[in-house]
Image (tube, rainbow over the protein chains, first blue to last red):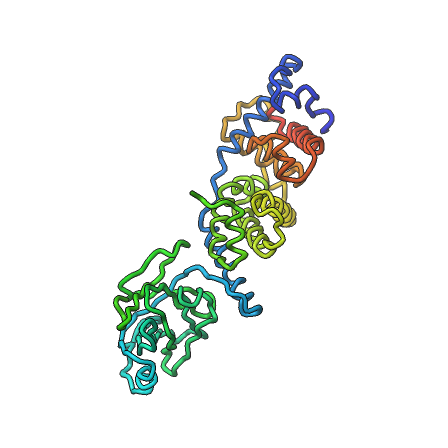
Length: 223
Length: 176
């Protein structure tokens, strides 16, 4: 059937862009060639570009792979932001010793009965003029694991794991350099959750949001 | 000014993984319509594109000409599209695709119908014929450009396009 219904060489040259071949074609073949070209144009017009959400899916997978590589090889990879949920609360301090003291002090529950997830970030103490201990907390009773990922640890999912308390409060303390930081909570290794109570949130470039904290030499400037 | 492909590739390899997004945005826009036309299904095309980007990332260190990342990536993409077509043919009957019958040869197909008829006929081509036809007639590329992107000779590509046209003319009786 293909041989019978196929185009002549002249028709192929015509379809390849040689209009001079038109005179060599019979009316039927010329019409068939024109219709094929027209159909291709109509089909092209129907094609919508692939959605930009694809970019986020790719980057999530790539960043996860990069994190695995780093853990295996020790190579430093930078991670892109994701989503989170945190509420920073600050207790600025001045010296490294104070951090240990404060860490041992009993603290009132920082997180009230919250929805499934909520969190606090509590700067505990400054260890150096340009470094401050920050205490992160997140209420996530249903979670199996929670970590903090941000600009301060290269957005590595496993770099700052939180510890679970019996009531579902996850927490961790980490030294952060003075400056502005973006962060997210990573729940169960895959869910990036922005801090709903953070005063500052910014687009993460992948359709989600990052929370922002600003650490000053004397403690939290803004969260 | 947007960084060159080579600059981005070098940054990613140096550890700035988030920079890979620049290439993803760039070539999702550049080749997205190709993937859609080559696979014939939006979800499957997106999956193929996603897998191609991930494979390219995994093999980025082997990209010998980072400035030509796009051409290198395109070949990975074409392989993923072929795989997607093969998987799709295992699950979708060609009979479900509804090309116009010959009894409609005299009917006046409007532009929308023409596009739909071509889509149905594309699904019956071999993957190689389909990608060649799409590049030539849907994307409007020259044979030389196609040869550069696919790493296949011009004569071989002309043969694929010609066979694709012949098959499509046979299938699309309404176009005669």
